[in-house]
Length: 174
Image 1 (tube, rainbow, N blue to C red):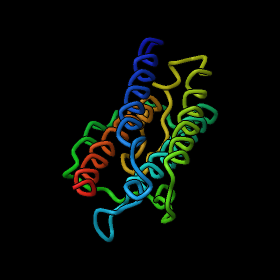
Image 2 (image 1 turned 120 degrees about the horizontal axis):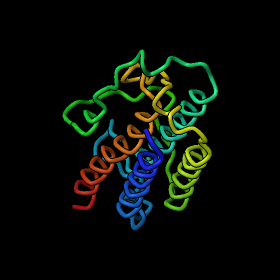
Image 3 (image 1 turned 45 degrees about the vertical axis):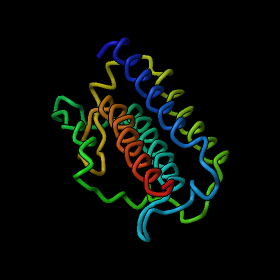
C-alpha cells in the first residue's frame, strides 16, 4: 500500500458521503422518520446506523494502529465487495443498531460530519501507510481484516445503504 492508495480511499470516502448527503438533505422531518414498513428502519435510522458504524470502524482502526494486533500476512483479504450484494442480508451488530427516536436533518448531517471528520483525522495522521496493510483487526461480519479493508468496507457499506435509502424514498415519496 502506498500513499496514493490512501488518497484514493479518502477520495472514495468523500465521494460516497457526498452521494449520501445529496440523497437526504432535502427530506422533510416526516420523510426522514417514516418507516417503509413496521420493522424496517427509517432513512434517519439508516443514517444513524452509518454514523455509529463509522465511529466503530474508526475506533477499530485506531486500536489496530496502536496495538500489536494480528498481522495481515496471517490474514487473507476478504471479499468485502460482497457488501454491494443487497440480496444478502446481515443483521447489524447491537452496537450499531440505530435509535428509535426521531431525527431532524440538521442532527443527521452533524452526526455524519462528526464521524467522517474523526475518521479522516485518523487517516491523515497515519505516518506509516504500510501499517494499514500489515495490521488486522477482527470485523463482526468478515472476521480479521487488514486495516485498509476496514476503510474500504466503510465506503462500500455506505454505498449499500445509499441504495437502501433510495428504495425507502421511492416507497415513502409515492
